[in-house]
Length: 272
Ligand SMILES: [Zn+2]
Image 1 (cartoon, rainbow, N blue to C red):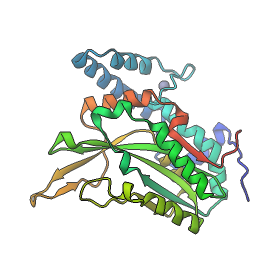
Image 2: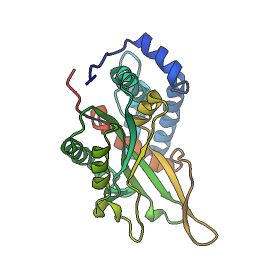
Image 3: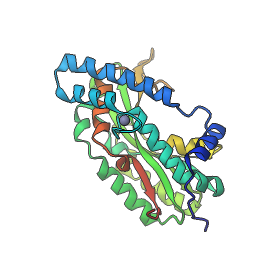
Image 4: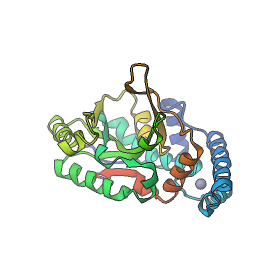
């Protein structure tokens, strides 16, 4: 088993990123993104008068390359997190083909927006960690935790957060089957009234570098739902940034309370 990880130095890394992930965000991109986040946080502070919003805005303002804030709500520090994962794992995945991309959706833990701050992400990760270990994949399973905001534009009370994981999993068919049955257990499959869910998706990987980077994006996006002319509930195909500034600010507060290690997922990873 080829399981040796070679940590890349920064120069090599940036060269590989340029080659394999040409749209990887630049420092300039994340500075602009943070600028937008600061404006949103200040504006929500003005309306709500809640200290946490202005404190987070200040934290992002003060983040520098030499004294990073390390907040998971900070686009700059999220970029650093992605770079760290890539530098640890990219050479491994370039050498070890035989991997698939798995998206695992935890329907049974979908959470209304007003309960977002109490949501226990560690419990979700620990349960998945236990399952993946029990299944017994031989090679590393690497990825991250992510959330989508399902915005019910026709009925805001129905809007909710949907937790999920993006993982690179070894193509070991029997084990993938076990993972599939776990995800399809009834309490997850029928978590939404009257609707059958699709809790697992396994895709081939064309570009392992961008797949790995995608697994650890760390920016929570929105999926918009609406009622069409025939009265049916439909969703827009593409994810977009969260439009409601209060919801977006709230997601930043939640992210700010998390550590990189709580967003990263890894099994069969030796300590280094
Ligand atoms: Zn930062």
